[in-house]
Every structure is written in structure tokens, then in C-alpha cells.
Image (cartoon, rainbow, N blue to C red):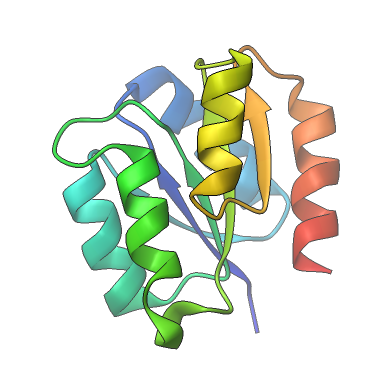
Length: 121
């Protein structure tokens, strides 16, 4: 079975490059352009991993993360915050919201793929 990964980001360039990279690695890719759609897709599609931007229209990535962690049925879903918000307070907020990992933009695609593989292993 192919692992399903949701990219929740409102930046088209990021979505295109991440989609290409993940599909090349053999993952099934879902995309949500805002936090509200991301949460709906997480509930409906049950991806194994969510790459979640902190700053999105609708709900922020932090709010999406908190909502997922508050739902026991979604407890197995891994969340990697992938965001430009790199201050210590942002990282603490993301980890406090329940993220499994926090990566700041710009990021190394090679390092990110290694991290994704580890999280899905």
C-alpha cells in the first residue's frame, strides 16, 4: 500500500516542488491550499503524514495541528510543520500544538526526504 501524504500549503511553488519530490519517492500526494480544507482532508482521507505550513488562510497550521491532536481517531497521523516561521517561539508553539517535527523554510529537499522516510518508517 502506498503511503498517503498531504501537503497543506498556500504557496503554489512549494506545493509543486514538494508534490514532484514526493511522487518521485513513490508517495501518493494530496494537496490542501488552506487550513480549513487541510483539516477536512485529514478527516476524510486519513493521510499517514501531513506537511503543514503554519501560515495559511482559513485556519493556521497551528490550529489544524491542535484540532488533529484533539481527535483520538486521528492519533496515528504524523505531522511535520514545514514553515517560514522559524523563531524559537514559533517552533515551541508548533511542537506544543502536537507536531512530530518542525522544519523551517528554506529547507534542503534531500534532508526533508530523509526526515519523511524516517517518520513513515
